[in-house]
Length: 180
Image (cartoon, rainbow, N blue to C red; front, side, top):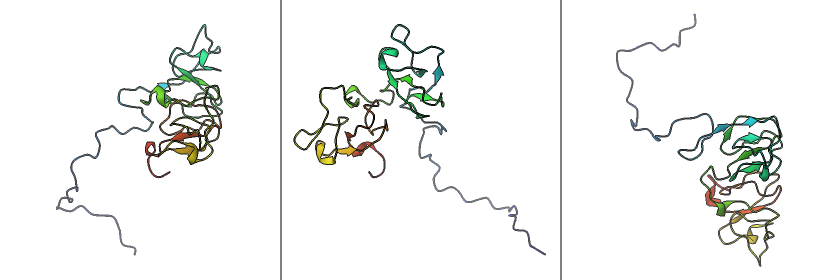
């Protein structure tokens, strides 16, 4: 006859926890959050395209360029269900939405450069600063920065915006958790 392995109640209390202080005062969430005070907005689909005369607000789409977004917002180009900073929900696959590239507390100095910008080809003689590219190797970046290799619009640590698809950017490895 098999014996029961079920624990039985005892008259003795369970041992005290090691620490009674919480490790964090931040609430536990099941969705990403921005800096304190920022609000995630649901993605919204408009019936008509976002255009300069009727620009889309934050987390609304479909935009085809930055001109279709309200002042201070950019058009986040998607190919699938990429997460959009400051927004939540899946939206439609491949649909682009207006967003605030600074919602995570980054500044204009940390905005990724675009191919349309005046600079942008780094080498050992003309090294790029943080959030600038196109670098090919770490030596193309200023001291203490590394070249972040990417495809498409993969986010660059410590930088805002999307930059140019497939462009590699210099970044500060201290802006990411763990080892790079």
